[in-house]
Image 1: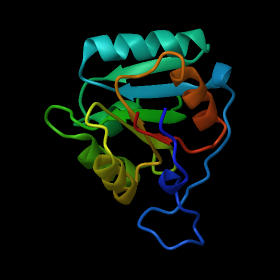
Image 2: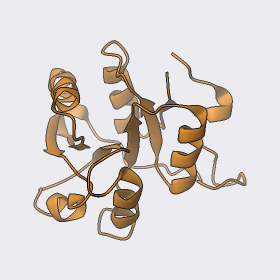
Image 3: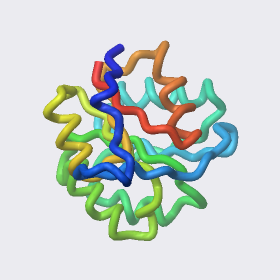
Image 4: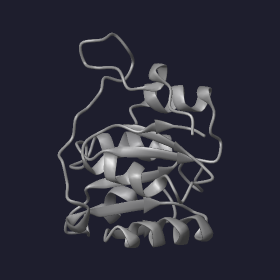
Length: 157
């Protein structure tokens, strides 16, 4: 696991392209997570790990209609967004989310293209965290718990 102090989100008092956004704390048993992932195997893995935590999840395969789909849900507490998606990538979907009613919902970049450069790009684009693939089944549940407690996760390996 690579968690480095220089990768932590900047506080709003620090200068940087993406200030740290504290979001509401949510009990995992009450949470709804929207997973935006085009790979079925990756979604099934995430859904199983989230179910283990007692978390309800919804699935969308493209960023193209993510805001419209979110409007059909009773609530969305966290969005796990693959960056490389068909039709509209995660960066464009994030821009739409930030101008919608869901602008306060934390959006975490999840990508197989995990590197320091991609993490920096995600941060400067306004993502609230970053998780590299392949997802580690031993770490992912804790990462989700931390995010639902309002703590940022910026890890790419």
